[in-house]
View 1 (tube, helix red, strand yellow):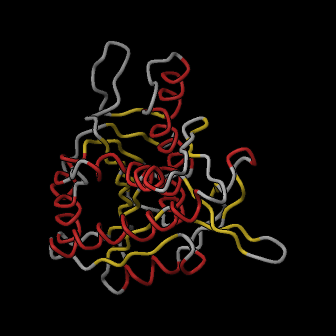
View 2: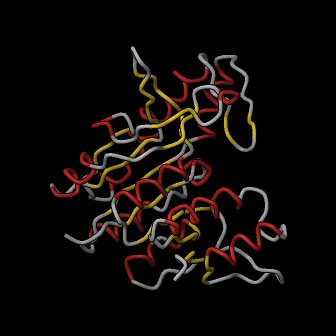
Length: 256
């Protein structure tokens, strides 16, 4: 069977109704196998605020304590996940929502004790995704993983970009695509870059050319590329061009 495309949909694009659903649906209908990974940060923040629970970030990651964790898990694996499944169904694509806990998909370790219940993926177990793909479904993965302790299993919040890179490697994906609200990574003169090697991307980060919210996206691309999987950053509205075989954006290539 063909290697799948892993497509990560950002929480900010979901929030604006620009999740690239039509493009994802077109890719699935073209006969490609597709796995969707999603975020949902803005929605989680709204629910936390409504419940009077403060939101705090460290180094771009949400600090997830014992009050934040159940809200984040419910929003990501419940509300946001099922909205995306429903949107794909409306586009006539059969999708199934899962989290990283289902089927033991996403075992993790604690990323940093200061962040609380935040996980860093270890080696994924993609059997549940492979079974769904073989049955003709599009799996939609919420970024909730688990950590095994001596006497219990803890849920953890996981960065969705990191999840996409880890699953792309585990599935030996054709590409990992990060749908964002920007058209491409930009170079030293502000020009959109069509392709980057891992070493070129690291140099642009070190120089401050790649900065802000683009850094975690590029770092996730680098994580996929390090495992031999090409990764692409593109605007969500351009997702339809994946099915046409003429995708825009910036492709981060494994080193040869």
